[in-house]
Image (cartoon, rainbow, N blue to C red; front, side, top):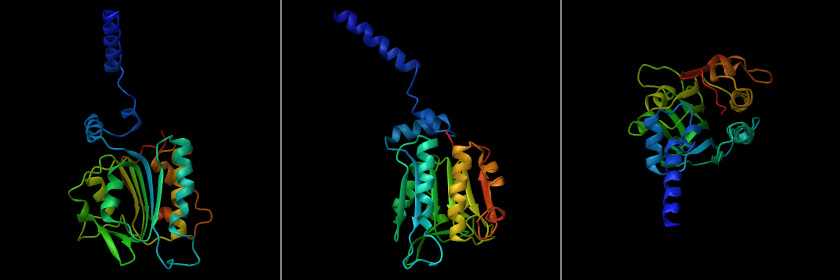
Length: 236
């Protein structure tokens, strides 16, 4: 009997070695080295973080809050990506350490806030996340970052913009804007991007190119900037 149990255990181990867990395969766009590094860190990799800076008082009473995109995008992520823990966060003060941790520990990262070429606002004070704050961090887990802020992709001679900074730190693809944008348009953009790329399985590029601008205040698509592997889809 002991010998039989030993043989069975050996067979089980062989199967596990030949057919490793499919958990790694759920992270498209990662190299084998990045998958291994993520496993070694022994941490929870969230599927999607949906973050909004919640100004008080609101920046514009005639517009929806920045967090208005969160629930619709979360629902698309749950239904069409099947990922774990799509997490919406709307705060008046966002700790810089928390924000960087969220970026490092998810595949999709959406952030709706005030911004500029080199900053993302994280509190009413105001205080900011600067491009230089990311210099010592890897963002290689990030499959796509969507920076819903003014001028996050604007090229200026004095600094690397946020979009390119995310790419430099290891993100697979990044979306931003090269000019000022309306909050309502940013919310609509995020929802339609999620629908096109998650539900309809369109590439990031095509999701933006063929996005309807109906109901938008202005054509936000003309201000959109992308970098990295934007031929990929945000779906499974």
